[in-house]
Length: 209
Image (cartoon, rainbow, N blue to C red):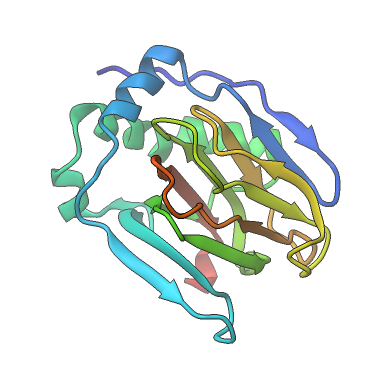
């Protein structure tokens, strides 16, 4: 499957910090193919309880580490997903977001992973590490999810919610990490028939790796 990159319409948000959202990131035919072929094996549970720094409960599958595809994951991907990762790893993709966000990504290292939030999965309020320059999330759910919203926060208080972003199909959100970029993911409701499925990209400062 030949995935041609194009420029989606990102809406810039300025409060309570700078972030971006696109409700139609990929062409419909490309999205539907990737949605249908989203990886479903090889995930490992990541879980950390409250009181142990950043805490969360998710399922993760590493796809790209330091700009290099993870062989075990790569070998199990469909041709469409391999094509998508090649686009993400391309200089054109990196240059587009460098220009759009006004951040130099040219020397950054890229980490990519597939994530699934099943029922009772969540992510507590936090700001991303200072070595992260930019993070992008692409959503691939198969239906309406009960919970799982990205919560844009005004502070570390989990109830200080400024905006709730549903993990809708083909939506993409970009965060520019800072000391003010507090966010979390609301717990997926027990019994939810659909999971929060996403692809997560981290551009990281090279010298901090």
